[in-house]
Amino acid sequence: MKKVLGLVVSERNLGNSEILVKEIMDAVPDPCARELIRLTDLKIEPCRACYRCLSPGSRCVKKDDFNFVLDKILESDGLIIGLPVYFLGPHGSYKMLTDRFLGAGHYSRHTRGKPCAVVMPFGMPGWEGYTRTAALVLPRMLEMRLVDCWQVHAALPGESMLKDENREYARRLGSGLFTARESGRGPRECPHCGSDLFRLLPGGEIECPLCAARGNLRDGGVPDFSRPGHTRFSAEKLEEHFNVWLVEMRDKYLRERDILKEVQKPYRGKQWWVKGRGGANGGTVS
Ligand SMILES: Cc1cc2nc3c(=O)[nH]c(=O)nc-3n(C[C@H](O)[C@H](O)[C@H](O)COP(=O)(O)O)c2cc1C
Figure (cartoon, protein in one colour):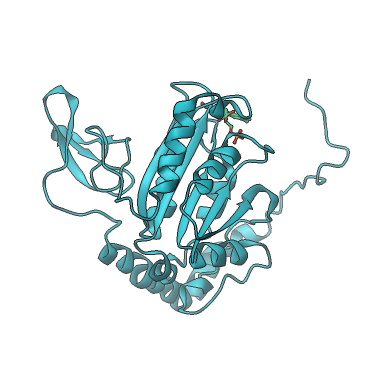
């Protein structure tokens, strides 16, 4: 039996992310086991950059909920992410989670080719910001088959389901989750990764900041990425980054640790830190 995991990245009870994910999951054909995780209920701490997870078979050493979420993602056959736009980008909990995937080079053999759909509610047209591009990082690092990256205009909790077309779209997405191909790219999206943000380079060249593919702007401002070349999300490039370059960096650190400690020494005594009080008796803003 297929297993589908819904990852809801919103604290809002029955908010748009939650109900959109539920509608999509509900339409996945049976037999299907469904599980939901509300990411904001879990403790996901910052990555401590210890690089331990780079060793094959090693797990993150932090005692929080990351390994639980990771296991759920790895064991599922399909992933549906509900990710609201917050301040022109993805909800911060999603970035916190993404940052913990330094071991992606060992995880992707479990996730490669599995379907992933991302649904992103946003409150105001024109305020979607860079959310789409940021949302793509996790499924791309895990080499998943991105079947959709759907932005839904809905500000108030539940508003997304006021429109029949959204419900129908969600149900189509769910019913085709395991049979759908990688989503097609629009003419103004990177054909390699699907990002819609580009960096302008000298000489009329453009670069996709997400996957690093390079192309040119054609007449009418349409990006042309037809030249074959580098994209960092190919299986070889990901292998090179996570399982070679990062491992070399870790080994270099171990070799050069004493030199680096000398560089750090003069800063050790400058303990100017101020600490918060964990919300108790916090100040007021007037
Ligand atoms: C703190 C905060 C920041 C937000 N920032 C944006 C934004 O920059 N752009 C936007 O279009 N909507 C923004 N919204 C609106 C949410 O994306 C919208 O209400 C969405 O439906 C929330 O999804 P949820 O119901 O699953 O939490 C923001 C909402 C909150 C609470």
